Length: 272
Length: 272
Image 1: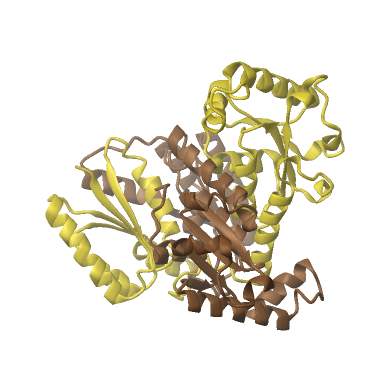
Image 2: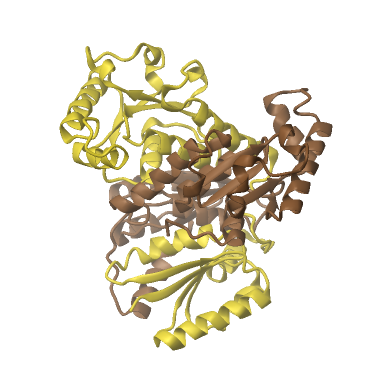
């Protein structure tokens, strides 16, 4: 029997869900049935969720877990009446912070993700469009504006990483694929030479790369472990020879790849 | 004087930062100097951070705030020696959850974002590539595979929203721009007709759109408030006439747009 978990928020639910995943990941011997419930911003909505949670508690014979980041006290208290174990983040910390900061909280909902000030919004959008315009080596003439240029063999994770870094950190990321043509003399492609200091390599285990490529082009030469091995060995040799920092993405999520690159390359985020 | 805040984690720092932003957003009369410190995964690194924090405490005469999601108890305790106010999420909740779940935590670092199982990774990557391949009406022949198709005038937020939904929720999102040609008879573009049930409209206030467009093409007809008004009015008329749900993105972040669309359209996430 899975344990029911509700990530509840009066905003997007992203904070509650992110925190909840972190906490529950510590209990990997337990199976959870997770549901994110965003925009619970009235007492009425809380009541209706309480009814659902109580029904599940009765049906399963176990009280569900609530992990909530509800700002409004009334809504929070309404939800607290559910037959559930409640991890109530704002309830726990806001009053502590009020004391520490000698200030009262504004208890306004949904402030976190309301990046509506023109500047921050623009940075994000511009970063996304920069990533798109400079994806996969399509264009290289804007590389002087790039904060970083990712390079690596096909399907090593360049594009998703570029886009994640753009959306999450507002960083301007170009990416350039290394192909067999580039490996003849292990020299940097001409387009990359003058931007060497901005380069960051992605590498990956051949078996993993072959699996990823196989989902696109099953049983092709492109997707064979042999071919993947040849390309990866050449790419790493190039990174080593040219002194380009690189990271092995095999066992990392996109979040981990992105944050490790930021930390290693010492890039300044444009979105804080 | 800004109050120094450290978001500290032995993983990516994304959870600590997300939660920290939520909490601090409640104190909008106070200015914070925020720093995310990821991968603090040894006692030695914690010590060195403690030294930095203590130095700042001394320099500013005010103890900094630490918001941490460090899993390892030893590292956490080392950090707790800093002259700071500590919001220690795992310290607060993990033992409570252990009791509630009748289970001990595994205290393994960085589990949250380690989406390294092949299936979840593939879903995300596939969703990103789907968004890219079906961006801006470039192709419409894959719309049968889309979970949702965003539509709206140029610069209403379609592309960033598509990519965010792909990365965060693994949802397959196409997007199709509405241009003046589409507004002659207020009928749906032919390519969209058979996918009407998947359509979701984005709209935006004309002044905001003009500001966004002006950053791209300053003082152009395209960026004029007049032109923006005409296009937006026509787009909304089309949405209303065809019964397409839509959302005004003017005062919303990309997270809010995405989660509201998910909730309103009742789309199932492929990534949980």
